[in-house]
Image (cartoon, rainbow, N blue to C red; front, top):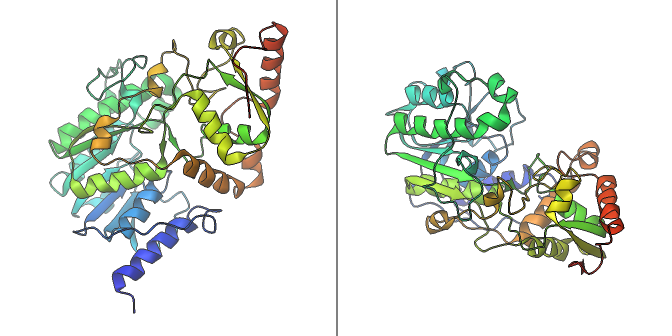
Length: 391
């Protein structure tokens, strides 16, 4: 007869699969070894993108998991193994956390320093370690190659970062997101001292990604035909599978590793050509890749990072986000799934989405826009012999 721990582990893995429609039959979760010491883990959020992956992995490792959120999103079925507390950090309602103790807290959704302050007032001295999920957007200059964790951070230019609200952030997201994440990191250190881990992810991708920024690429490759590939094919891209980020967060909780880490991958330089050909290796089908220089695209009004998501030319203010130094995170145990695994699982999940969401992506240019750009490039007499690739 299987042990109780084995039964719980199997139930956790099954719950993880059921949380990703379309994957339960397409993916068989790999066995997960039990942790040496079970922990009491509090996850602030837990029902968004990476949170369910953290919960599933923590359960599979044998930990006790509590999630705290507003209860407004559908909660994955964890078989009754997860304690669910409800409150609202926007209004400062953290009463459900009062008088409780946990070994580790993982803070997923916070961008506002006031949220960290309020959490600290309730949890300081009652959690052994605090893990704050930040962003590489905290860096003051996103252009350099090899941005390290010690690079200067964006400065908040307002009167009081603790006075910012979700409404004020939404009104000026582009200007405030990075500086407020940086201010939140500083507040985490004020509240929890040396018992803090700062995780700075790059683009988070894979199943459950509702932004469609990465998803646009394999879907476009799978559609075939002539595809516009920006630049000369050598510009790098970086991203991290949400499952890799979630599982590594649990690893950091188990080891209570302090410090600051750039959490993006892969663990090698991935140029644009290698990226699109890697996507094509999964999707298959006839396709022709046509390189179009970034200068020409800029002249046509293309918005890098939006029309062409997660990709930036060498002279862009976010060019460094495709070549961030991730060696410290790798040394601390961050591992990456193969690109083919991320893409295959993502497409399986996407196929199970509602029809309207599959038809309407939230990022990336339309086929009509791409066709017009390719037509303009060819009309300029530069479409042939300019590094075109066929597959």
